[in-house]
Image 1: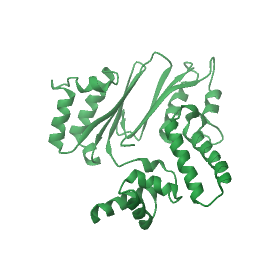
Image 2: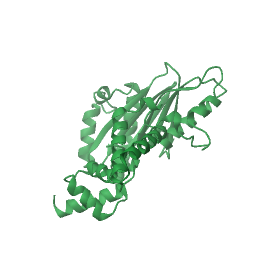
Image 3: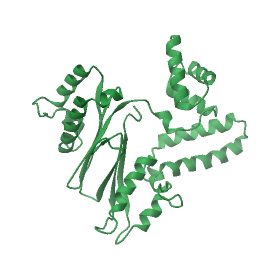
Image 4: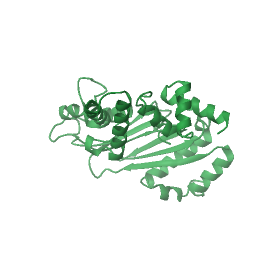
Length: 288
């Protein structure tokens, strides 16, 4: 790795972890320049704390949502820079893709093989747009919520214009009673956008994520010099907090810190219990 590449990686690692220059250099040396492994190395040493920012890379673009007759489609299109994300050709392309994504019900393969207004396929128009703008553009992911079960609600954070933003969340709720508790749907969607849960409940969180977090917690406690028996007890408490913080129903309600999401759902139930059937949250560039 050249000195310039090393310095660039140190700068990036410092921005992601808040750790000093020297420790970042040691971590990169230990992991042969691997950013993700360096983050893990620093966390195990107890130097860097868990942060959702650590798992992100700076990637630009737009997320777009379309709602019609109770059904909702969602799509994320990435660009390399925010400058391109504000380009009108790019925005127009994204808007048409959002419309087509609704028609293809979030099927990315079908979307790529669908004709656009100019008669060319989406995948061919994408190549032409890349050539015109001179920057890599990707159709990253899609999602579709039908109206066969429950009711769908959405929230667009800091929307650029209707249905377009950088963070968009959708939630499907069962137990909505018209004219009684409909407003809770958009509030839960807003909570999801702000709190970024990993799953509906603790049992639904990916076991690989939980095991990796537990491994990091134990290594951090052991490296701090605490006895093994104490490390085991502390790690149980920390992983319990991690599960609560990342499961939607157990999260603290953003509009009232004295309540959990589960409490709010119970309070707003009428003829039948309010239940979260599904949800999704897109943040542009997250996890790329």
